[in-house]
Image (tube, rainbow, N blue to C red; front, side, top):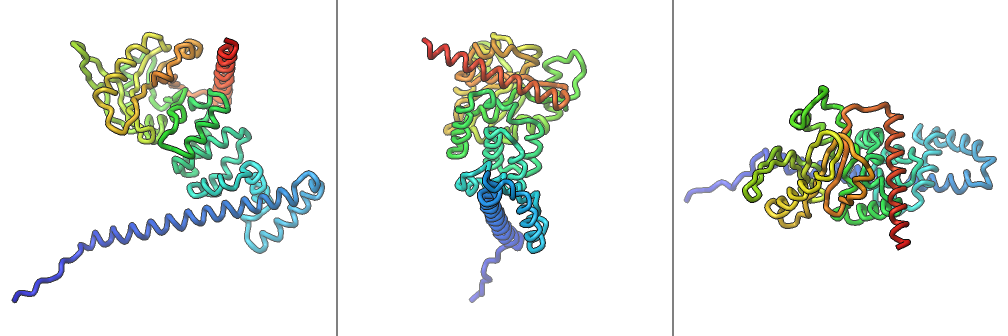
Length: 354
């Protein structure tokens, strides 16, 4: 009778299985530590705000904070110095709802909160909090997005404040149903393309493909490249799609059409045709309707607004090939936001009058 050896498990597979267990445990520990720290700092901030820095004790607050910081640093280290204690108080003041802190601290560290509480605008804070938690951004990514004025360039920023808050709440509660406006920008900053003067649409497309990784970073990390100059046949005619992407969170195909100069109204008909073809022939079960981004060198905001392209899943975005100084960029974006909100309020007021 022949003795058979028991089957052996390859060492590589054993290593990978055990490694996955260790990494999973580490990630779980990090999450628990981050959450415990954030909640502890929130509780400390609440105590300081209500017991030391409230209006009735404001005169004695500074001296009390100095003594408190000295004692805490001596026992627990520099993390509890005066500056950080004021940060904790500000943390509680800006995020008084502990349920929200409990939820997002599972994805974000104290360092994330330190960056976010620097913002004075509560809607902007909520935007970066929600996007960083949902996208699991690193602290470095959060800083880069804030420095690049992502909020001001996101389509949602030009909507009324009440709508922005509803969309952010939707993102937190049901990420799968998030609004495309949270992920679409205007303008797109393409200063890295290094194009010469008098370039063509083909030159623009080739430059984007040469810098595809940086282009996708500007679009957003959830965009996946699917192809360029995709030929489609409609009737007896051939058409070509400039760039085709897929957005993982939105679960939609995203068509990008590149145009030189300002946006023209007749672009809409062309892009609508492409979207209908994609919906019929490329949209998969479980996916939502395709959307289009028409990237133009410029646009008349009033023309775009009157055309009301959002219900047709068409977004118009400018591309900027030269980045102005940050102060100029900030001023231009702020002006565009104010003007867009004013036009929306004017139109909604007219609708109510009717």
